[in-house]
Image (cartoon, rainbow, N blue to C red; front, side, top):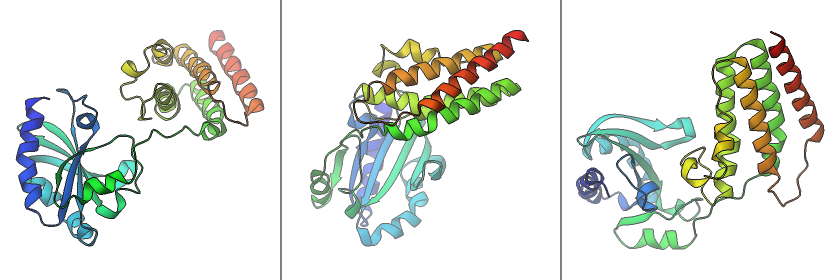
Length: 266
């Protein structure tokens, strides 16, 4: 473990223990999976007495400021987790997520990994975690199938119009929301966008790399075709009953060919 991470934990934990509203503290992320390195942040799960949850949530910025030299923080409402505080600390310069949870939600909350409990005032936190187990969710292939070809058509339109930055963003969206998660789940990892996909999916990595585009129409179109090919491959791994949007796929791929011809014709 990097010494900077341990330094922060050793400094923060006594402060958290002194707050009577807090019944336990756990660490998730790289710490929990024993993959923490110099580039990792820390993911704190700060668990409160349910009756004190609102009070602690209200004071979370003040509490964060007492854990170290807080440079900046903001609630994680961009990922629909306003109760989580994302922080940047100085000395050591460190990214730290503070996820505040009431004790009675622990066992009911889905999780992809087993956090490491580092403080458990009355043994209740370990007991709550013991009521359920971490699990990687099964992908909803139908959710992807109902949307993918619409997204392909949309990105093709952006390429045809010459809005290449928007097209490149669209390709990134496909990697983040569809291709990356499906590749990670295929390789037994949580579907966190494209996090660590280089390590988790080495066999398919060249296919994912082929979905990257330069700022020109030909490159964007080739990347979009590669994205469609990779999606069809990943969809084919599904053994459950799936309503393939065959006509949408056929029309979207034909449209890609049409846009390609226009691009080649200049």
